[in-house]
Length: 238
Image: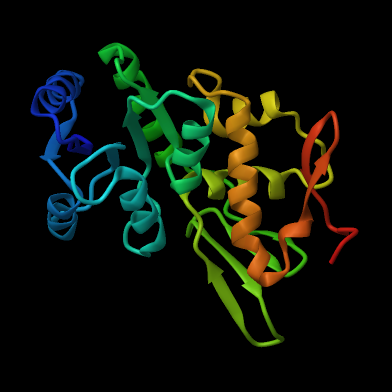
């Protein structure tokens, strides 16, 4: 069965161009002109990936991305943001909203399809190791795709993470106390075939820490100046 892509784009000609190229690449494609229409489609069938335009009538793509990330039923769906906004601040805003990757208009259809393939490869990748990773009060189960945090002797709470943040946390917990450069994280979490800037790592680290902060676990993820990031068993600021 082919993988299903939902294209949320209000310009019919662009939506058609994307759909044709994705269909030729072997994907099943659904289309929506705006966020409300996309929500209806999501209720009927959950896609494997969403391509989301930034500028749409009514609810913007950034607003819609935040909604998808805040809902348990859609928070794990990879999001590729598509927009004419190409400044670094705009890219960061899109990533902060929950996008996993970013393509600027005008775009190459071949590059777009390559990014879709890369995102889907990363999303469906499963770690063979079944043993859960444990660090401090945190436990990550790669098979169940779940991160839980112990809040009392008898109570743990599941943490809602986007797919990229989960993979990032998984890699860090699998390699505790080791310092990883941004390039090393890009190669191991994103894959070196993806067109991703090093700044993207900083954005996703920030999002990961924000998700851990309500449980006072954000200090486990440390910045090593001039080198990169690591996760530690003994954070300095707790």
